[in-house]
Length: 277
Image (cartoon, rainbow, N blue to C red):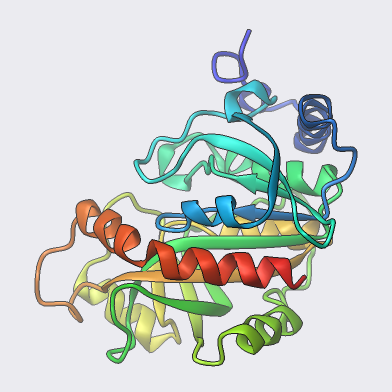
């Protein structure tokens, strides 16, 4: 029976780390790659970068791997891919993100990151499409995530698990990205629960508390990555100005269109950054 029809993470008694280890074993069996060095989750607009990373060793539906589901959102490809870079690194490309607003629980949100860690990845690259608060930012512009504010009122950490997030988004990796594109700006990402877009008042709240980017993913995954001991790089594609900053209504089609228009540039950027790791 497929992971889609019988997901072990729906059992509250299941150990999410054991499920991740089983998923990593599935990936090893399917790809023939014993250890992946880097993992990247592809958000809206970032999908084409997988084709630029290097030689594809294997590509397969995520539902063939324990605990994964088909993505609920257009713009996410629903596959996992193993790529060998020209420098000989193995990259696990995750095109099947479970969003918190889908209602499957935070364990499912964190599963892809925990699987990547169990597969050996020491570096986690998290990308997304998001709204921008800084007036100077334009749709189609990539920005680095320097920190986050988790507004979901949830966490992938369970019990008395205390993890230091002081330097969650690696300065070393941000500097590496800026060495490839010195024009990259950065900001603080605010993860809202979704699926509704933020109101203008919520955007102003985010701005007041220090946020520059608003979206519905990434922060919970980043916390899980740090718990697993991974070094994290976060990148947002600004698909629109946030509500109240932008004067026209927001729509998911706008996100998709902005991603398609920016795709060649941001895909090349991401591939060059990962290739330099």
